[in-house]
Image (tube, rainbow, N blue to C red; front, top):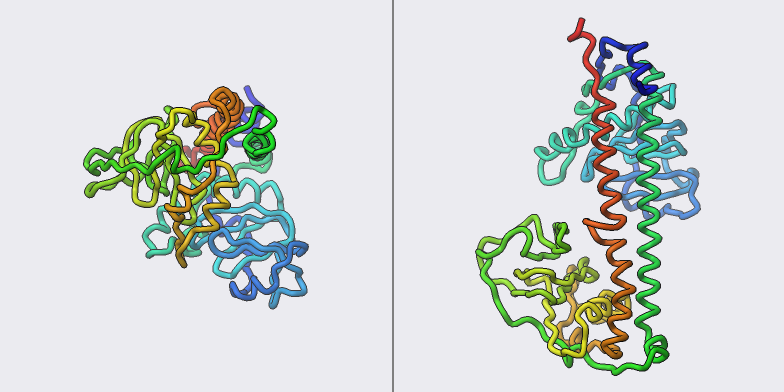
Amino acid sequence: MSRLDELIQELCPNGVEYKPIKNVYRRLKGTPITAGKMKEIESADGDIRIFAGGKTIIDAFESDIPNANITRVPAVLVQSRGVIDAVYYEKPFTFKNEMWAYTHKNKIAVKFLYYVLKNNMSKFREAASGMGSLPQISLKVTEDFEIPVPPLEVQSEIVRILDNFTELTAELTAELTARKKQYEYYRNKLLSFNELIKSGGCQLKKLREIAEYSHKRINAIAMKKDNYVGVDNLLPNKAGKVGSNYVPTKGNLTAYVIGDVLIGNIRPYLKKIWLAYNEGGASGDVLVIHLIDQSVDVKYLYQVLADDKFFNYNMQFAKGAKMPRGSKQKIMDYIIPVPSLEEQRRIVSILDKFDMLTTSISEGLPKEIELRRKQYEYYRNQLLSFPDNKATA
């Protein structure tokens, strides 16, 4: 029997009482501040964090915040507009007064509320979806929401367990970030002209000399989730393929085949790039590049085009005011260093390991993080499910 089981058996064997949040926690108000003012007072060295709508977060000095209403105790912020979520924060902070926060005299109770809210976030987001074009919830949604209120000893053990899950996921995410930086470092190094010259030299060819844009078309009727590629709502799958939540039902698309390189061609997706492991169709916002030079390994070409140097080059010639597009002509003028096939494959063998470790949903760190996330959500739901003692009385 676990420590939590022992506590529940001892302190609340017949369930717990459920109460509205407003009856258990003290609600905190924010600060009336405009987006313009936030831009004006933002400072990386600021001692107060300010949360605004969506994912906007800044730091500022308290003396610069007009009519500041600062929270100096651990609290749970309810993000109620745009992005519907809950944030636990312990340091001094404030927030736009369209949101609200909750606190309690006991820090454990505050963290417990955070986990309860996160566990029920789908319900809040569902309530927000019916409030017009911009998702938002009213104060009443959380004020009247009934939560289990077990004894503090039980809350403390639940918080300890969930904190451990959270910490493990954070460690894996930090490792993934570090590996991605390492991947970028080695790709830049291995593909630099100096390194390629040291390894036996290379030819310099324009992309148009070794590849062409796909001229084939495919009807949207043939599209499924795993063989249509748009720039948004991408779904990686276990085969290493890509797909989309949205699938068009009519019109012609650009066809791609196994081994084609697909590049997002509209901001903010200019840095998205995929190597095709299946056959399918792509939207007009995706360029399909088909290799025609047998002296180039397609995985090597993919790594060259995934490098930051190509992204910076593409951005340099992108045109358009709101949603700039890459120049198809300039992209084909991009200079590709082409060493021997043997050297290309040596480089690919090194970078493939990083690619698998940092991007594969079926292997590597992304898989581990996804498994931990599912495990965490399962246990969170189990740990926060209590019988109502009124119903069992």
